[in-house]
Image 1 (cartoon, helix red, strand yellow):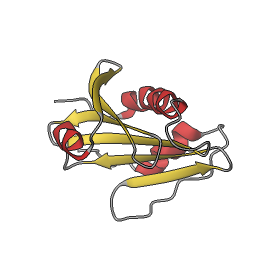
Image 2: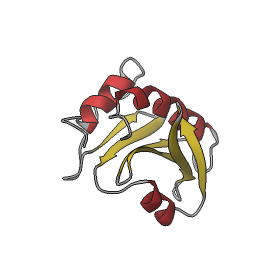
Image 3: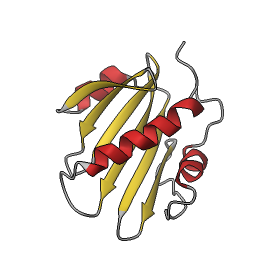
Length: 128
């Protein structure tokens, strides 16, 4: 589904020039996390199995939205921060997670996550 897209390569490309350390994949999944010392952390998950319906089921505060015209959902992360899931297919999604070191419930996390998602969307496979 993601045709060789590597979450760390994509994350590093989109973080380039913004002070983030290189991304690290800490699991067997196509998932990558990068941090910006003293400021923020962001993650990208390219999930070829779960779609937006599973994202809605696993998050309490889901808001439907769109990213560059593509169906998406936004949710607060319980530890603080923001997650945006972008539809790739019925059973595939890309998830962007942003957390700020300023603490929980900082609305800037969703602003940053949305800006990142808007830059990510053109790199994703088109919805069939």
